[in-house]
Image (cartoon, rainbow, N blue to C red):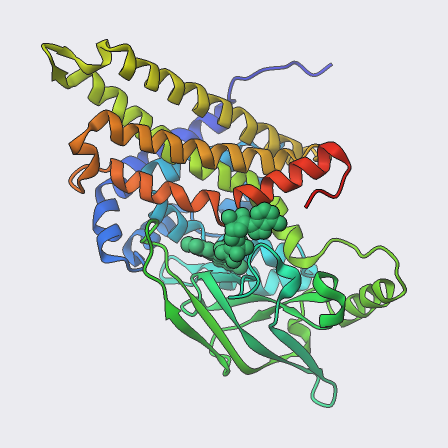
Length: 404
Ligand SMILES: Cc1cc2nc3c(=O)[nH]c(=O)nc-3n(C[C@H](O)[C@H](O)[C@H](O)COP(=O)(O)OP(=O)(O)OC[C@H]3O[C@@H](n4cnc5c(N)ncnc54)[C@H](O)[C@@H]3O)c2cc1C
């Protein structure tokens, strides 16, 4: 019988120390600057690439951990360093996840390297699902992909919004409708390579947090791509659509498959921010004196810290469990992936807010990192499925009822 242990193995500990060093020495000192500049932090991405943490080899190694923990450890440490810089570095992986969940092996070999490039020639990827009128409800996607049989080309039209690396990426993975009458079961994923006419960046958004990560609209205007850039291939798509039209159950929907696999990873990043804020405010509470004693000597402050620690540890257990379940192919019968994402992201919002409270006025000003951590934390309850949508997933899973 397999022995149960909560200890990290040597491989996991080595990774944790290595990434912590990068987070502490490279990310932390640069975090405030890139938050203010609100631009893509190319030098930091280059450093990450030189170190070997930006690219497919690293991702493959992390995902090969049979316990599922290595990727979670990596993301927690990176977000502990800085969530905006972390997203600038790992954002391309969303496109990679979009490719992996739908591509043929040949397509994966061709396109994944183009999402990262090399340390000397960095490339970015973007995963484009959300639209102005289709966020939580992707069944309403308006972006259309129409097949031009004579030329064996797909023609894409539509506007995507809130896209990480949108318009500046070299490779865009776009989810579009090939048959609007079928709702989300009529979706397919396409890959659009560098220099393709008909794809451009629309508005770039100014954000509350994770400001080192680029977020923009992606506009598709008669964007023509070769037929072979339909992920999974035409034959498989036609078979799937035929099954749906006959009323048979469709295989997993394109966009949903990607989001489900990435949820614990989003939770792990939220956890990193929460831990950063907890550690900082714990140290501060021991140093700061009012009424002749350290503020931590007041239960009002000490209990906040105790609660923060409890929630962080509980969140980590949920994140690690979900990632272990994914790695060991256990079915998420109770929406465990969604649980981990919702709980960790809400923990991050709460813990960073309490950290501001513990620092008082110092928590509210930009000379200290705590207000930035709070701004950064909020996005985790919104993207890759809002907290409400995660609760829907859990509620439906535990009840077997199609809760609305
Ligand atoms: C910084 C950033 C980066 C992003 N990156 C990407 C990206 O790379 N690619 C991409 O495709 N998208 C990306 N997104 C989009 C993100 O995934 C969406 O914002 C998110 O899915 C929510 O959609 P929405 O904003 O349209 O909100 P809506 O769906 O309009 O939701 C508004 C509110 O209504 C609630 N709500 C909606 N439906 C229900 C329901 N059935 N029951 C209860 N409550 C409900 C929601 O929970 C929310 O509170 C990004 C967004 C941001 C802000």
